[in-house]
Length: 399
Ligand SMILES: Cc1cc2nc3c(=O)[nH]c(=O)nc-3n(C[C@H](O)[C@H](O)[C@H](O)COP(=O)(O)OP(=O)(O)OC[C@H]3O[C@@H](n4cnc5c(N)ncnc54)[C@H](O)[C@@H]3O)c2cc1C
Image (cartoon, rainbow, N blue to C red; front, side, top):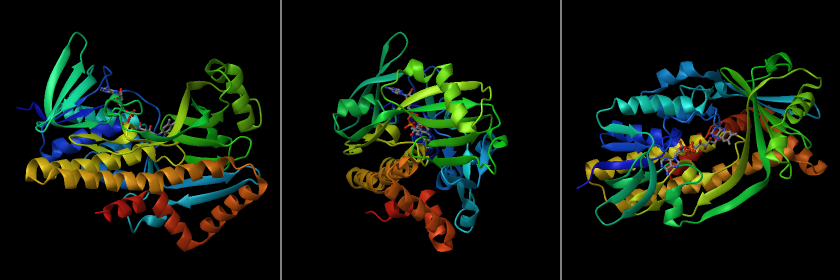
């Protein structure tokens, strides 16, 4: 006897997409979130076109679009030469109804889907519930949840782990999380200062390559976000200090302008992939399954692609009686292969381009980007690849 077809651990963007897609497909699903409300997390801010198509198919895009900014153009800027290499997703208008990135805080999606789940006939979301343990057998999974005053025991057919980078489900499974952690920290400062008044032709998404001081300038509706790398040896207190904030904006703007910040957040950044995503009746998706640096905005988007892929397969198993192992094995092969071949490779390459200090390597990177930017066919391939369409084509071709 099971309480739910699927329990999803984690009510972040990936867990709520998985939960909502499963509920819409007709499965009885519960999403459990350890926090007491949808976490207002200012990490991901870019939704790529294929993710927008998926959200459209789920019927939530119409509500999402007004919450963000359409960003058809993103830029690579070479700080030393002042060059601006602009890439316009409008060139993919024949391939997608949404030829732009949506700049929108990730928590707006989690919050919207939490509301939708709460009102859904097949779905439910419970807050202040932390998955603390589970065990699986041939019939299902027993899940223990820590609630404010008790441990609750539930039974489901499948447990989906979308419980983020520190996933307790992944840890209980004992699955290797292969990869590495960057030595430096990443510091993200957000401000209401209108940066577009300080730089010419600034887009909503700007990657600024500089061997000494690379940075990313990202716009969300109410804020500019400035992402920089920070020395590992410097304490978090020092990194978040006014003195450091003033130094960063001084270098960025080339003048002393008083800048107020709304957030100052430090991240440790990893490139890691779980050795396997399918573990019997327990499946890993999103940050629980893989981590990468934020250059390119691929982490949450790839998690959303995991969620949609897995929801499709679980629906076939639960509703149509498809054999579980081939479906779930294919989910693992499809999603893990593109994670290694595209997302890990691309984000590592993006960081190398941004920070390249060896003059020869640096000039090679820049020459490569210029060549792509000025050739129509290469530019289109690049846009299609960076927008993650190719990774989905590649995944679909994996049996
Ligand atoms: C600075 C920065 C910028 C980024 N920008 C982008 C971007 O523009 N585009 C992009 O695609 N990606 C981006 N990312 C990556 C993105 O933020 C993550 O990939 C994304 O948040 C992963 O979503 P998730 O739902 O898998 O995990 P999370 O967002 O971490 O959500 C996990 C949820 O699970 C809950 N939880 C944890 N443990 C338990 C438990 N035991 N039981 C129940 N609930 C639990 C947590 O409270 C949390 O709400 C960025 C990352 C950083 C650091």
